[in-house]
Picture 1 (tube, rainbow, N blue to C red):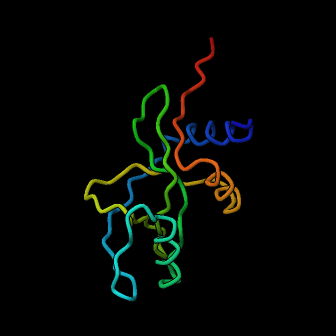
Picture 2 (picture 1 turned 60 degrees about the vertical axis):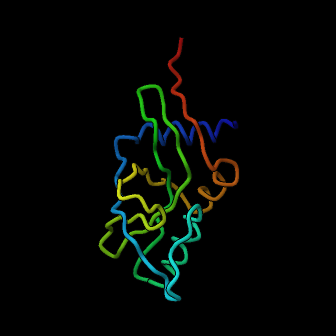
Length: 126
């Protein structure tokens, strides 16, 4: 891992207390189809294309959180015009922890090209 990538995940973990739990919302696209599993980035982009008052929110699902680290999975959700966050891809009724990407779209796409998932371990020194 390059130092700038490590810095990115260090900063992301430092913001872990800002995780949110988006509302799960079942939607249908204009053609009547539903969002496809494992296609969150495409689903979010399509939803926003069909609903221009909404916006894509790229970021990371958070699981296995402990004082020692967690697992980050690249993920995209959507926000309505008021900023309320919605999960449209994962069908579970159980909300999933999400941390928004902080940075440019280009930076997220660059990180995404290398990391779809990252197991983050805190540097505990020593």
